[in-house]
Image (cartoon, rainbow, N blue to C red; front, top):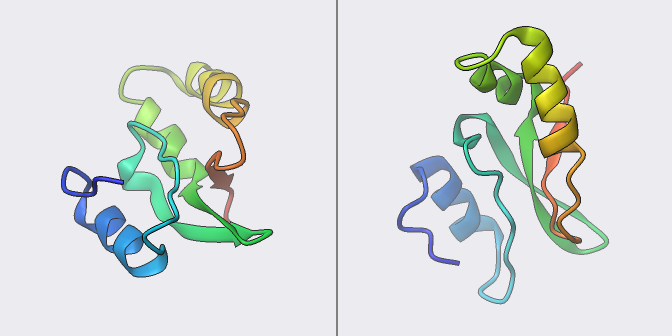
Length: 90
């Protein structure tokens, strides 16, 4: 994974928490919502703050549009075992 064009926070996480053989998929446009990297069944995946993702969509959409768009096009999209996760903090 080429990390040179990634924001520093994501670049640091990738370099510090993944081996050279591992990779993760990132959610385009949600760089500010990136929390870190989690693992399940020994597979790494990117984790994002769901509320921050919705906030980033509010630039171009109202709340209902942003929620619907996010649920269907982002949160509901399965792109393989490395699909990012979106956490709603308690």
